[in-house]
Length: 112
Length: 115
Image (cartoon, rainbow over all chains, first blue to last red; front, side, top):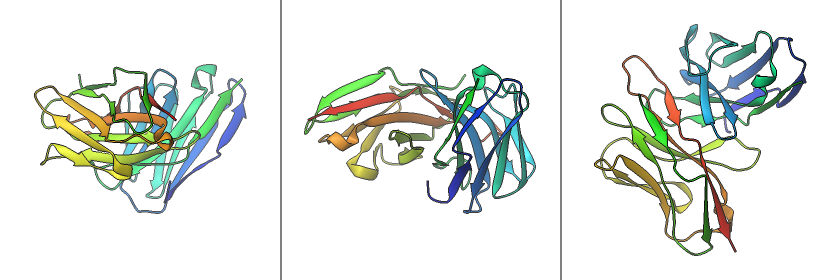
């Protein structure tokens, strides 16, 4: 968890409300990722970033958007939360493509 | 399509016995392979990786993994299991599609080491 934090760590929200999760890193790493973890599915990539203002979609990007206006911050937004987005969300970073990732502590999101 | 499979949802092993957690992959080109461990209510922690070179890779906490190209496998091993090794283990592979920097994770294997 060194050098990468997530906020909030826990959040309960209602269906239809917008939600933003923040990932912050102090390592000046170029690549950042957002995953969700669900039982039976492992980790699934939502979006990732390969530089400031450079992002791309992952396998489960519907209903999510991201922004990266500076190297250290990567934001994940649920435009209108649904119950199917109840999950644990992990942010990760890597120094460059093809090397190991370092993960944040996770955010547990519950959509009621 | 590129993918990773962890065929066992759970592996039980007695303390002191050797352990193996299985992983097979499907990827075009040369694979970059990784193992991560997750303890309860924590993020994933990097254990080891195979990029190139020796097929036997050594990592953290006494873990090692064997890359087998012909069987497209990357099994995680440890000679003598500890109760503290009980956790959720993920295998991952780098997606080698041009212009992408994605990683694909398996569904995870829960390791339970019995005292």
